[in-house]
Image (cartoon, rainbow, N blue to C red; front, side):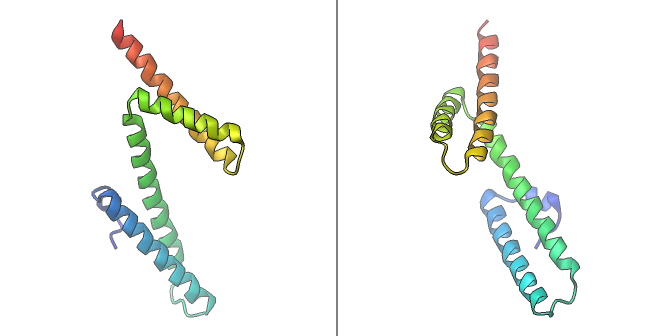
Length: 119
């Protein structure tokens, strides 16, 4: 398992997801060993949790980069769908609100940038 951030950045999205899954499985095994008093090095749990955090952070960075690269029209449709989901006030209301806020900001920036380019 590579432990360097540079190695993770060089991986594809699928490889990153697979590594995350393996690391989560390893953490589960470590927790099980800890519960049965067979864990030799307790610091391994902390290391595994940090690796998971690194992997999820990279996935999130890539997700946001893809979102920023979307054209204004696709962002507009995403704003519409998130607005409808937010208006429904179902579970995940806070997450939906945060996503809506972020996408609205990106859409507004794209529209403003397009208007400046048209002048």
